[in-house]
Length: 259
Image (cartoon, rainbow, N blue to C red):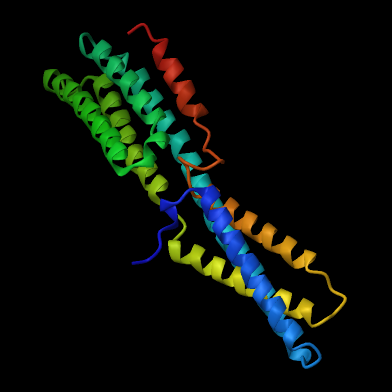
């Protein structure tokens, strides 16, 4: 069974990865000390190649994590706009549908606002999605009732269009939340980081005057950068969070409606 990094906390991952990288560095240093004086020019070439591969992998993975982070941020903005538009058009509906729809949208935006916090467990996420779907169904029933009275009413048509967009944006946001950097990519990145630090320590040990400190400092920095990539990839549990300000603004706007 493959190791799932998403199941572990970021501090635990950082500590374990740092230990593995430093252990790899120490093993490489000891091997280099044993072969001191017997190395050749190919050793430094291989070290440079592996370090270059590590830099390439870090930049590639960071770009993947950043693009997913930006997609989640855009999804929050788009969904907030869709909910706000639906609420404005709901106010155009005759009573009792207008007041009932606005009340439902107040509850809906509250659930969507806390969606990131429900990513901790699958049960909480499924419950939030089920509540959202129930409210969407209730809003749709109001739209059906209005359409049955007079399908030519302009406010009803506008409300139905906005409601469709709001429902579509829910799925877009859920897709963005679930889209993570593949676990195999992160595991490969850690493997390359361990090997690269081991070769750097090996090359340093071949020279008697080179200190251990630069290799160990590089190991700490590499572990920290990889942790940053994983932080970008965890919208609900990491240190870097997607701003919910657009949803907060929409919630405040709907709360101020008279109906």
